[in-house]
Image (cartoon, rainbow, N blue to C red; front, side):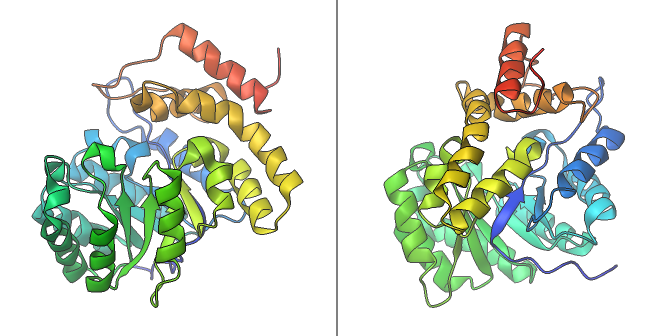
Length: 314
């Protein structure tokens, strides 16, 4: 196995989608075409697979391994691949981490176990044990996925600091706290630690505001559709070019409004339909319990693509 490209936790990191056929099996051809298209975007730092965007909740361990192997074969020699670790039990998470390391992933995005949603915030030792078990099983750098506190899965600030102290392989958080004040607190405190922990924002519905606070980068499923626009916005913010940032954000805004409106759970469903409308995949099948979008919703997405300059106004 070739050495995995080194992962650096900064810059633009799209999370790719997964294509299914009409029988809900993985459509390898279209999944690889999508991955190839995203990876062709200039100046990406990495790509994430087996995340929310690839419907990981509906994929078996074997399918996660299949998608990672396919992705590594397609782009693994050019870009670091971050693999999601999504499991309710810590032992199952360790199995995923070991699999990803053996396949050749460059880093791991560690989801909070859903089993912690009923009071886990009051038992910080649970989160600490979860991360130490994963870190003991692999040398890969880890990204902590921070959820909103209201979900019951967001780690309290003090808990994250304790985890960072105990687990030096954590190099970043994917920040979905959904609270601007807390988000800025994360950026200012974590990135200035003696051993910095970078913040990768995933606040894609208010991305320009988030990036202006100074996170090291972004990790976002919307990058499956608009990676080039995210790169343009990120680089403009880094260059303190407000006019260029606003120009990029003006194109992102219509799609952010379309992707992230209620019901929020359809965000990646909508992104997949947009890929089909753009001719980047052949079909937009999703696995239940997700359901196909209505024709009215699809028309709204077409209008957003036109407003963003990705489709011609016909």
